[in-house]
Every structure is written in structure tokens, then in C-alpha cells.
Image 1 (cartoon, helix red, strand yellow):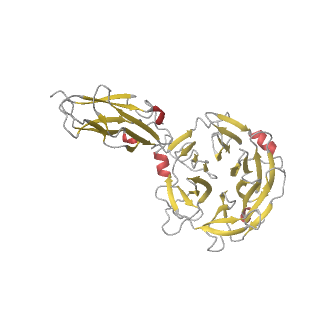
Image 2 (image 1 turned 135 degrees about the vertical axis):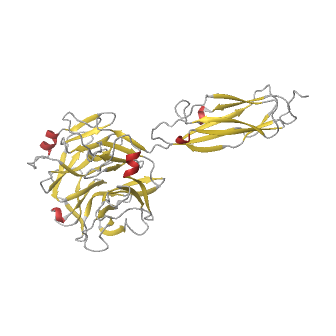
Image 3 (image 1 turned 90 degrees about the horizontal axis):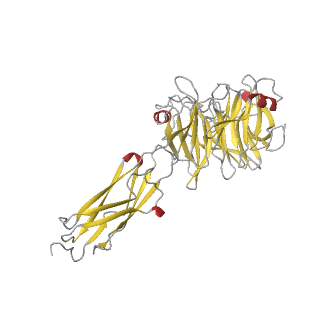
Length: 443
């Protein structure tokens, strides 16, 4: 009869899954009908909340339940469409999934073919200002952020070289150690502490700083515990890099700046006023400020333009077995042929280890003045030394709400456990103070 369905009326989704980015605004999925007959066919598309991580109103705008209708005039293989608007929420987050179920009322004698559709919404917000100038302004009014590190709780800890104190930020600014208390802690230094040359954190959220007065040569290895009183573990001239591993604080020393020799040193993480111990030295090294350690306990640092041999000049070096028979080897030339990193001599200012999908990477900050789009942040996969450009200064400035970007003089980044990169900007040349987070950039 003209008002009946066909003998085998069936409705299906044209696809089972799709992916789009938040910036794509909407996705359209088609439903098709076969042997429709001559009767309207209502079809319900409902969001399956138990199988979805996307939230209506926050990640997508479609109502929780939507009814589509094939008209009486529909022909076989005819289609109707459902548009799914997506919210560009400007938040750094994991990909969200919306699962939809297809159903037909029991009163309608039609079958369902493909009955579920899954839409994955990929985040497109990789750059986020965590703390702006007003957020970082202490009571003294002297805003600044150097030597940043992230605790496991998510808060950022940093030294304010203008104020002279140690602060943390997590939804608000907190004083970890005032300038007067910090200077009292480092009683062996008669001048004001106003320079930080390195920072590291251990698994228990204790933070280790390299502090000095910028007119002096002595560097103090300062431990800020997660709870309890700070201590000075040791001191030495010419220390530039610091990292913690398995009860040991490893240090990078530069003879030109006063260290006994070019190389690597250590103190333990508990005793006070220690003399630094030599791990391994090499006169051909010219170590930079950044260093880190991988899961096997190997140390990494950058040797700059004053290294004495080709195997040490402008290379990232690795120290194997630092707690035993330590040996220094060339790890990789970050400026080798085909590398996206631009060589302008002594410009790898930081080296941090990060893990993604079971792979370890060195995240490097390259402050080359020769790079067309400004300073560069790149990664070097430890397993095969493959080099990738993650983002540059232009991308950072264009994708944050803060004005401009100017790098700090030491430790301009921190890398979180999940690979998030935190970059600190200082107020100069039209830029403003802020700490930004850049997410999901590792290959």
C-alpha cells in the first residue's frame, strides 16, 4: 500500500567513526535508508553518555537526543544528515570522544544496519598562558620568573631574580622563600643572591637550585624541600647545570667560570656544606646551563663553541654510568645536516628529558639569533637521535594571549612528566612577563 514501508526497510549510518579538530566547527554524518516504501521513518540519534568523554554544552552543542526523519518521498539510498557542532574551548586537554547510538521506535517496522557512530574531537589548543604578569607580581611589585620547575602537584616553582625570593604558582602566587630568608639560608655569601643558573626536582618534589650573586663566582647548591627547612648542600665556582637522580645531585662545571675543571660533579642530596666530588672531567668540554638524566641514569648536557675538539664542540654529550666508571661520549650533533635546529654557536641553553608513548626524548631550547622565526624548541629521540622542531618563538607569540616573548637568561623552560613544555618570558623589548604551557608537541 502507498502508506506502508518496504518489505525490508533498513536505516544505517554511512560511517562508524570520524575525527576532527576543535577548530573545524562542526561535523556532518549521513544516515541512509534502503527500500523505504511510502511512509515517514523517524530515527533517533542519542548520545551514549557511558561511552563518551565529550560533554554536551562544553565539547559539542548537539542536544543529548535528536530525532531525524526520512520523509514519505524518500527513495532507496536516500539520506538525511545530522550536523554535530563542536566547541573550540581554548583549553589544553586530551582528545574527547562522542559516541552516538542509532535507534528506531518499536512502532516502526524497520531494521537498523550500522547503529553506532563515534566522533573523536582532537584538541587544537597547544599554547596556554598559565600565569600572566599580574599573576606573577609579588608584594614588592618586582615581577620575574627564572629557573622554573613543575612539582607533581602541578604548581610551578621559580626564582624571582628581581625580588630575590622563591615563589610558586598554582591558581595564585605563594612565597616559598622570601628574599631575606633565602639570603639568610646561604649565610656564606655576603652579597645578595640575585642569580639562578639551574634548577632540578626529585621524585619527592624537593627542588634544587644553583644560586649565586651575579658579581661573584661561587655557586651554591640549594635544596628547597617539599616540607621542612632549606639547606645548602655544597658550593663551588663555575657550576652551570644541576639534575637529581637516585639520591645524587649531579652538577656541570666550567673551568672558565672558576670550576676546578670542565666536567661533571656531584653531591649527595642530604648532607650540608659538602665539597663537590668529581664524576668525570674533560678539558674539551664547554658545558651549558641545562642538563638532565634518562631512565638508565645517563647524563646529558650541551658542550658549546669553546670545546677543544670537534667531538666536543657544539655537541650534546652523554655521561654513561655516572655513579660508577663514568665516561663522556658524543651523543648527537644538534646542528647536523638536515636538522631543523639553526646553528648560531653556543645556543642550546637547556636540555630536558621527556617520555611519550614509551619513547624518551631530549627536549632542547635553542636560542639561536639566526633562526628565521626566532628561538626554537626541538626534540631529539634518544633511541635513534632523530631531531624534530616542536615550535618556535613566532608560534609561541602568535598563539598566546600575552604580548610578545623574550627568553630569560637561564633555564627558560621546564618539561613536565607528560611532555608539557613550560616557557618563561621576561618583560623586555615590548614583551611581558608570563609562564606559558605548550602541550602535545613531542613526535
